Image (cartoon, rainbow, N blue to C red; front, side):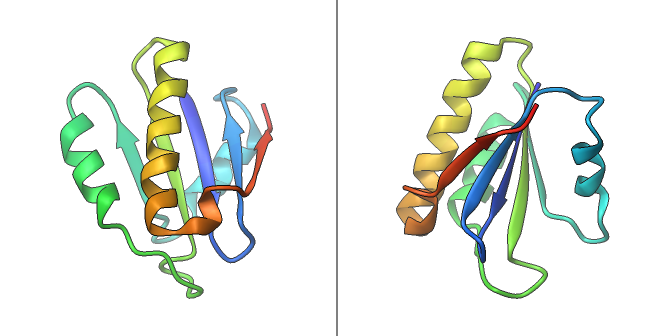
Length: 102
């Protein structure tokens, strides 16, 4: 499983692969936006992400992306595609810092 945290107001992306990390707990804030991409949700989630809005308010300022296919290399490829997709709509995600966390 791969998780990526997209922060819009302070443009950066944090990558996580250790499911026991305390950073994962930050994902549990109230009304947290989360996109889970699996084999079953692939097309639905990509369609939803294609129209996702980002802004400087608490409801739109970030996103947790969870990708779970049981294949690390494929998950990284899907993450790259989502980053390009979001970067096409919000240029801050195109060249922002990518921080491997765990």
